[in-house]
Image (cartoon, rainbow, N blue to C red; front, side, top):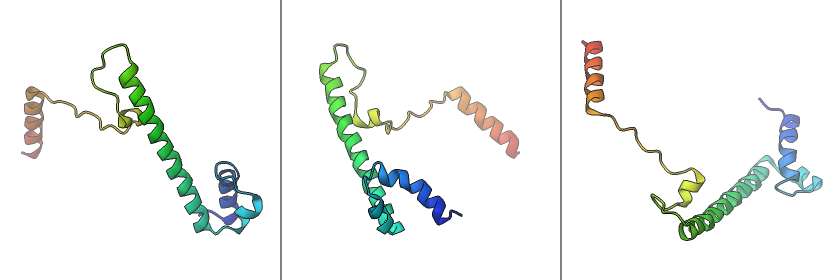
Length: 105
């Protein structure tokens, strides 16, 4: 369990750095208000990343001198693109079924 002193030690760098709060402003906040401010900051940074990735993707897709296999997307740049499923060959699938049946009986 975190004590109030430990929480303040962890929260102070965020309050004075990214959130830009003054000591008296930080001291007057409740835990919930601080959490909401931090969530708002996190949301803004995510939106900035999405916007920047959109600009970069459009530059890559229009100004590249080589042919791309597929167009660069915002999700690709942010690492949110779903990973491709591993393709299983027929032999591997048959082997897996035989192993499963031998274990089950």
